[in-house]
Image 1: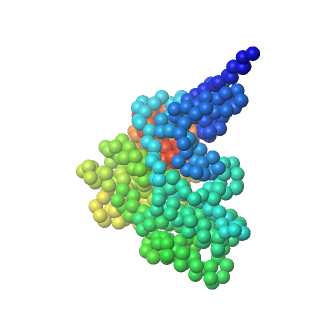
Image 2: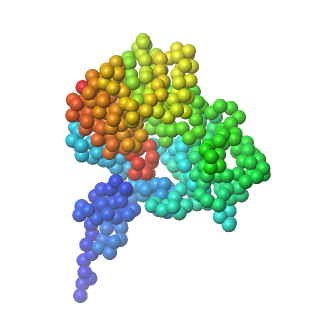
Length: 414
């Protein structure tokens, strides 16, 4: 008697959270397009299924797609953005090649630590859990940050509190910036040990939140971050694009698309990532009189941008004017927007619903919209489209490599 035939089904796409999906809609963990699933639930790897570069993959929740090759990663990033656009009825003029950040390129990350009876664990949480995975390596982080994993584990094991600790690492011009949250220092010994730790490991700054807000306890020289060559004071916990290469790509697109605009409003400007690039490019290209309004609600970021803008003006760059303004509660009105040739937007994940509503009623000819959330971007883009804007250029961006987090930069024109 012959053996019963085993039915096999191919994985045809990735879902938004990284699961493989069959044509019938069955979700399969750790499967990619081209893999085959039999009726017993066994996955047979296909051509695009690769060996994960990290020993912690599958347990650590930091990455979801290390088993996918670059073709699948690119398709996933592009598909997420295109599907968001078409789902809102947006017609894409030119879909530019997706940008995917390489391994070991993340310049900021938040790890978690927990003191144990054997020492400490330091790493990322498991997917959908508060349980920490004690990592020995991280192929996502820049080596300049990854090298601190072991020393941080030792420090948390000796001086950490009983509860969870958040460990924020960022690269600045002076080196690594370290922030410890939920980390009360018990006694003089612990306080001196923290200072010794910062000095001995060459940190540019150490900021500790002992339960009363962040306090800088070590900063040999003022910490800055270079934005298009302009040093900008970097407040503790300030937002940076996750990778330098992705920042360069998005900034480069914005600069190219707005090369003829003289007056530009950069909304949700942060420290001035786009504002200073646009100002410096205007100077290099000979575009006289270019002015950039950099509007930001977060006070520390606004003040850093304002100070750097005054220095940039003295250095002869295009003029950046920093404005402290909450664009969620008090968006620029059409009469204010009509002064500008173009608007640059880079809002938080929630998007810019209130500001977009005002922008749709304005006469602004060009809008460059960078986003870390394709869904809120597409919602806002549909409002612009209803007001007569066309989505002329769109570039998907995957700066969180091996993650399901996808970003983009786009150009709307009318």
